[in-house]
Image (cartoon, rainbow, N blue to C red; front, side, top):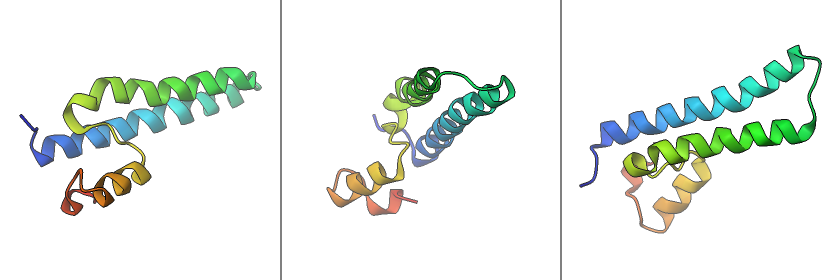
Length: 84
């Protein structure tokens, strides 16, 4: 069963909020701490992408990157009306 457009929209909104919150939050916290090694920021961004995907892939497909959404629409896997 495919979730409603509203549920998919909310899932993408929540996923994007998690992505930005975790990833950007890690940068802000590291700046406040006086800097951290680059691998730690890379690991934070890895989890910033992983967590929304794991949580939301069953609802919306978790295509948090607009380029992925455009690619799915161009290939016919989702309707163009769902792109916005």
